[in-house]
Image (cartoon, rainbow, N blue to C red; front, side, top):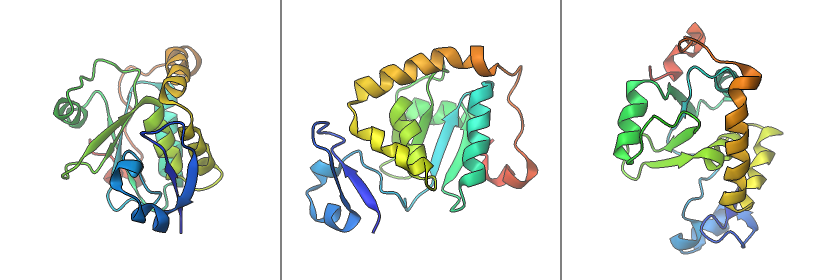
Length: 175
């Protein structure tokens, strides 16, 4: 049984338990928690002109043996549609999003550190261990995320346009 973190809505609670036990708890305690083996695809919305973001997408796609992730640049129509459904705009390119349950009832939009750590949770070890940082309060995680997001263009550079995906991954990119 894979572990499920508990405490997304109660940041002071830091309990790790099996999915079997989590299923027995009232849903209010497990809201915001995504199990390690999702039954639906997760879509990563990333800044397509950011050097780091493109490298991250290649890194994730290469390690996603279960093919859980799909990808779409924030500059595209798919991202504009998803963000509009959730009352967001794509003008904030400093934010990475993960869409849980893309185009399904109950679709959820995760952002910043929650999105990044959810992405890590679904990767193989040792990367999945980074998900333990979800136990930190979101304001602390997001503060670190914002600092990193401001520095990424300076360190990793910026493309003039979104690079295309390698042919073997084309089916995983929504545009």
